[in-house]
Length: 99
Image (cartoon, rainbow, N blue to C red; front, side):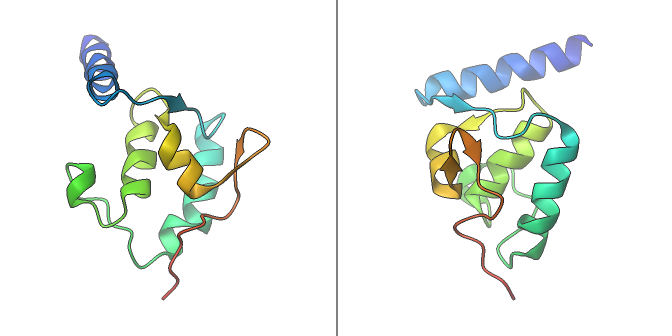
């Protein structure tokens, strides 16, 4: 439990250091998995090995994956790139590139 708390504090510092506003794209893990299977898993840019947003094949997917294992939030500018309607994330990513 302590490791998770330390991890979440690190995520908080990451956002604070970059002065990022946060957005909660999914209300639970099932929504996350469904969205990812309809978007990231279909996109040619998706990879899950990167350690920083700058080295990620898709910066949007990097932050969504990070949210899944942390506090569930992504930067608001990333959410806007994906697409937000009525304070909900769009069901289809605006930047998806199908093979």
